[in-house]
Image (cartoon, rainbow, N blue to C red):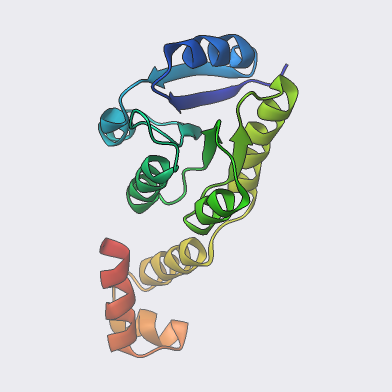
Length: 176
């Protein structure tokens, strides 16, 4: 069976970690689980993952999904190309739309169907690999032009048919 490399699961319920471990062990080579969402960004800075499966609720007694949206936005800000699939027991259309608006690759409800969960995770990874964003394509194009011009930004700007100032601005944006 084709194994994907790694998944980060973030859910405050240890039973969910165990169930997902059994469900996904034939699909992923490395499965890492976190109970505390405060560890997400540190973990992502230290290790590479193909995907994040993120619970929507971490605050005891609330089921608004705002915790998950906040963490989704934090992940996408630092790792915009990393697919994130949201997981919740309290699904509603508005929450799913909000999650997708902020960059979620998909939305799964608890309890889940194992085959559907696995398919959605694989699709999110495959779709992420298949299509390069416009920003990525532009950045690569700029790097190639600068390389072909041996670092001469004036020649690279001319080659790209943009002003030197526009090229400077685009380079500055790439460095952010």
